[in-house]
Image 1 (cartoon, rainbow, N blue to C red):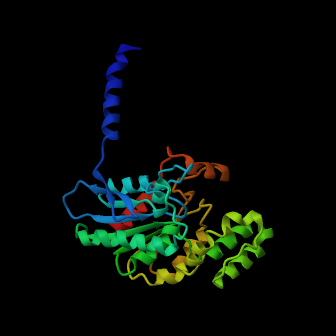
Image 2 (image 1 turned 30 degrees about the horizontal axis):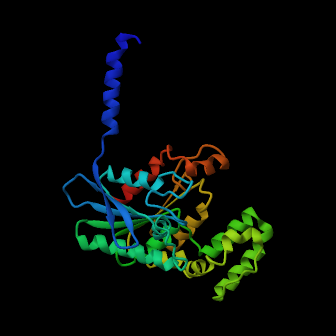
Image 3 (image 1 turned 180 degrees about the horizontal axis):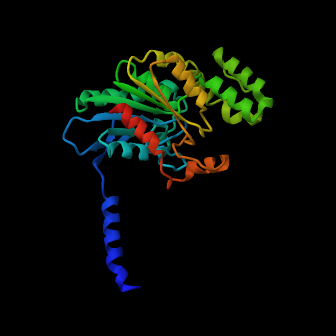
Length: 309
């Protein structure tokens, strides 16, 4: 090694270490109750901060936005980015994550249970009186959960990749796009479920959608129309979606905007469902769900910060 380069390398390493260690918040794991465990990030400022509660999307999603074999840390990165800019954040594991870890899975878990958990989180932090305002950021399924739990309890709401239709309509549209030959089967099964009944009469290829064990959960979820729910929120609202979201189309966010005309709508070019900017094709998009080294959209962070602050 050229010894003349050593001072430069030394200075570079010092700068790099300094940047890596620059964290403007403290971290604390908190159990809200027997169902909800999460992580609170608190800015170092002595002032009463604003708190943003992050609610994860569908599936057994943990506080960081991850599932088995799908580690992207999207929600963890969003929480850290906001807290580094003075916003306290709390993100938590969905109750099914804890059930899986403990081997005590409750097959009778309902969509309303997720709303109950989110409500418990909001009430917990309201009772501390430690925050000047409380916002909810609901991602995917968490958008509807956050709307329902936040009504009358929060100061602002962010729908992040949230659907604008009931879940049965969203799924029927997805089937139409990916396997149109099964569209009528999907409509028929959802019709049976809307009548309050379960059924095993569906094509085997649709098993992942209509497994008899998840039909009661889906029936509960189907009761809610996000367009009607968002109308009931009497707080500032920010609706965000990305043009490369493979799960929730931009049209869904526009439906929410039509239902709540005073809401702000931000469409982020090339952002996908897990908040990454995708320059490539759908394969690159799908692979990113398990690529934790990627950075989330900085435009997303800026939009949320501007809205909250």
